[in-house]
Length: 195
Image 1 (cartoon, helix red, strand yellow):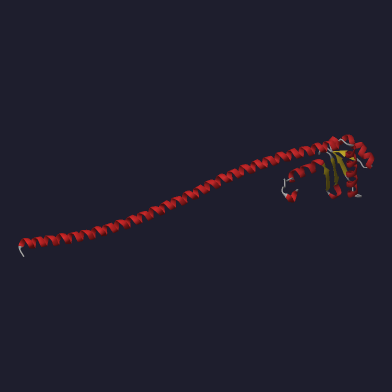
Image 2 (cartoon, helix red, strand yellow; image 1 turned 60 degrees about the vertical axis):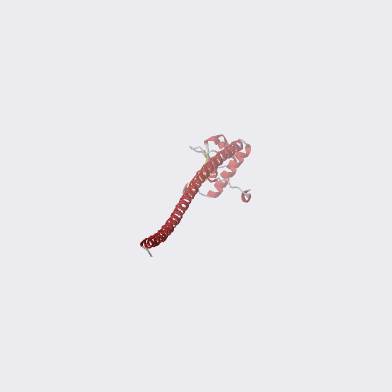
């Protein structure tokens, strides 16, 4: 073999070896890049999923917040309407009481309540009061029941009040007391159970 052939053979072998080496390094580099790409995609997918989850939770919170605000507004409207209807109902009740107080049955009612209070007191001293609006009924009720009836200094919108000092008892059969108690305790109950 000549020197030129040897050189050519050395050259071919060196080039082939360099190509093989470069090919291996290129393949290793390509594998490393593919691995890095895969890890990058995985990290980005996890970041995107975390962001989606965070935005979903945020959206749920915003929806719940808006829903709570709307429910509160509806509840306030509902309560306002109930109070309006309650006031209207009790205005009608007051009108009916006013009408009842102008009938002859009202004086009979007063006499019955005076007699009930006297029966409750028994032998104890009792003071029976009419509201100032009922001063026109004072003499008639006293005559019909045979019991002294006084006019109260404070109005209580019809009915009677009686005091039994020895037992420290106040009998409140006034319309105002019953009216205020019912107005305070009144509730709108709905559904089949309350119809």
